[in-house]
Length: 210
Length: 210
Picture 1 (cartoon, rainbow over the protein chains, first blue to last red):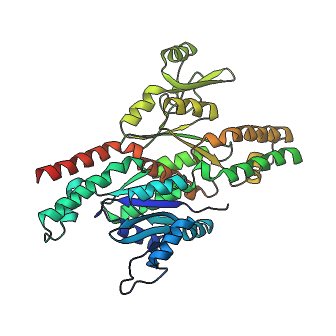
Picture 2 (picture 1 turned 45 degrees about the vertical axis):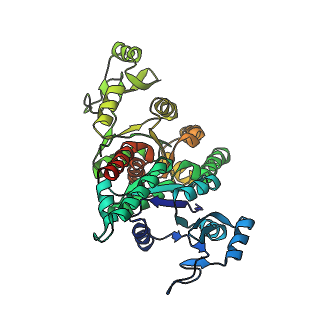
Picture 3 (picture 1 turned 180 degrees about the horizontal axis):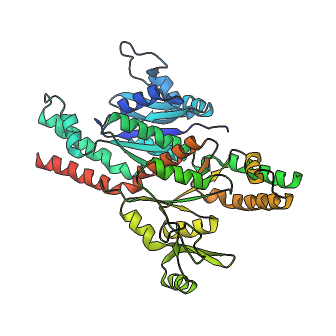
């Protein structure tokens, strides 16, 4: 049967390992595409246009906003970041499951426009583990750690709006769980209505024809 | 974290292999319990009370109905069949995922009473395969096959009310898919709200305490 790709939004606590999970997922399994963001910030050494980011001028970016060519965007410090609609939709149409790493405000915008998107929140096993990871090698000041915890507490506000909660305790387990979630989402009845229509018609045909 | 069991309803076309899938599932994976039905029909040789069925007299069965001790029941020919509530709820409370094989009318009653139940519909890959299985060894009359197809067409009416559609083409794949669905259902946010509350409180505690 024809398989339409699923749009997957991954959010989670800073330090919970979103990036590592997504990298492992795309390396281990076929059929995933990581969404490539557009940004107005300058490329860093080694970053490739269209791979790391789509690098845009401020004028180009603002034109994309005006054209509705971005599913969502945000401004951090003095740079724009956003998700180009065309790349996402091409990948979905090709049957790829597109993964987007994004924060809660962006996740909400995605869900509004793509109600079938699947929203995952990644967490550590407990708050202490999160604090340990945020503390890092112990070189950070109290102030920095406090700010990171404050940010985590803010990130925790919207958790209930996500569809699934994934605990990144063991990376292998976690990657398998994420892959299992997407696999199961493909089996959801609402994604297979065409199959149902076909088998129903064929049953009618078999009864009439024979 | 404490894990509450999930109630899983399995329906599907006669001939799609529901029984085989459920048997393989419980043999291959831990944590599943097959629901045991109550019935007023007589035990057949080798059937054990409390294992194959809970065997009841008509009076006992009707008392169970009156007491609300059955989640659902139906009458086929002159016998009652039903699902005892106590067995299901004990298993769920013990953290087991309880599997119920039942038809659409029963599935609807389950979903009304247990909105968190997961409803699976099992189908063959296409209508012709279903017909071939129903035709069996070619010893059945046209009439019998036609009646089975008619029944399949009726069973197909309620498919959209199910949460997932599973194709039993290859048994191994199918069993893995069903297990993957249940595993992923445990990761659904609405089943993990206690975890979210805990980590949120712990984060607050870490920020205040240190």
